Length: 410
Image 1 (cartoon, rainbow, N blue to C red):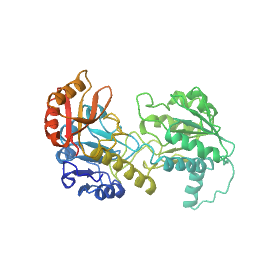
Image 2 (cartoon, rainbow, N blue to C red; image 1 turned 180 degrees about the vertical axis):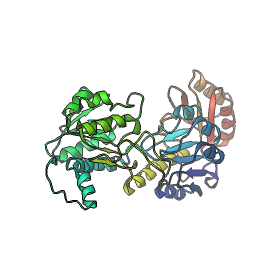
Image 3 (cartoon, rainbow, N blue to C red; image 1 turned 90 degrees about the horizontal axis):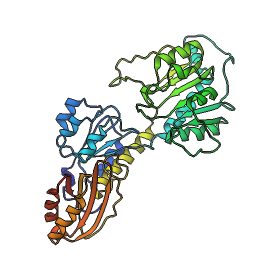
């Protein structure tokens, strides 16, 4: 926006953790924000509490945990940007109660993950990990036994969302038949076929790939009981969340021959930083590929994530648009010239909007535009008011019962 914000841009503090892409830094600086600090690591709770007290925008990835204590220590925090797919690392209930917007990038790395899943399926069905290991050890293993083409095989996708559908398209392009299971009815893409149960999917699929969120319902969904129903010799890939598989059960399935291979990128417990010791039951298993949570870690994906999340945060900071937020109700607000804009976040209880309008009317404050959106916890009102009376309106809105947060935008 060209309009000057009521709070000078040079005083807005932006803290980016976990080596977030420079595309985000560039976006903030090009918009006129000079106090942009970037750290390459995550911060533990106690350390984050010490540095977050004057921060207005906070950027994190998957390692940093935003707890209620952290939010209580950040009275000036307007928004949190999760520069990744998920928001599990943020206490969304606490953020909502405090009127802090939380944004993420649910689509920006889908292609990176989908491409890698197809590549891993090819490597495993050809038993490349074993042949590669032997070659490095000086052993020649020129053998076609147990090696197959993907063409004509069945890909079973558990979770038919943004990444699952991308995998579906690429798998069909490779000549595979695609079946999928999702708890929500989804429109198939191409010739993909929905199935009614996990048991049906795993019993039919040559390759099973997981693309589900971490929820109580998905925890250890791949367990000993379900593994008994897998097609013998099938391949299992988990590039979703670390707690959706029982790794001991998967190891036993590999040893017994139920599975002929596996690729795993996410684990229930992961090291805090590069170089830390890493242990999993799947280490040193034949035809198993282990990667360090890099499914979406490509230069392209990180750059796009940086652009996506920073733009959402800037729109919220400068215009009040909250599209993409998981906490503040989503509003797309057009810019109105010749007016001052005030944002008001309040508990979602009856009578607040009526009180706002009554107060402004009683003080003869002309409202040029008003936008409201609520969720089950809070309400979000954007008001465009006469420039001569905006300060008075702001002070009145601060006194409204059940107010959580209010600020003059410009």
